[in-house]
Amino acid sequence: MKLKKGDNVIVMAGKDRGRSGKILKVLPTEGRLVIDGVNLLKRRTKPKKAGEKGQVVQVAYPITAAKVMFKCSRCNRGVRLGYRLGGKSKVRVCRRCGSEI
Image 1 (spheres, helix red, strand yellow):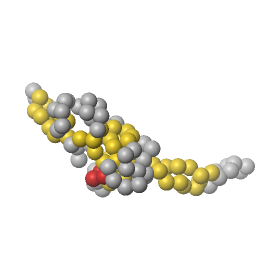
Image 2: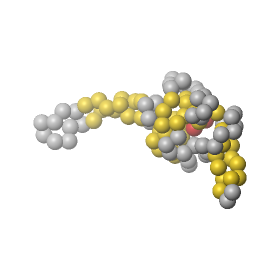
Image 3: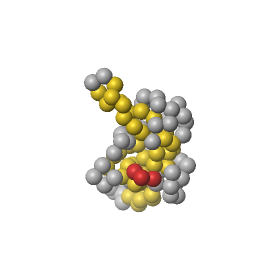
Image 4: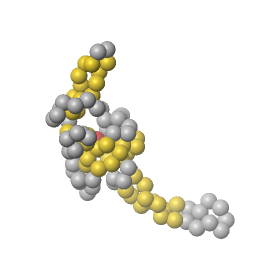
């Protein structure tokens, strides 16, 4: 998986198509990502202490990595990622404009 925690991505398919956000968590064995503000589900929480009220909380759930694309800051749209050998290390690059990420 070429996407990492902290990358900005755009959702390309599903109910949140067109929305973008930052990756909060990567689940590589499942091929899924948790993205800030995308795929929000409502969960009820029980009161923990006496006198406290239960509430409804919106939680970001994982989305399939195949439904998102990396958002290039230079192109400002969804792009595929590639690698280039830069000195002794591999560097991620935008396949559209060729800029380093």
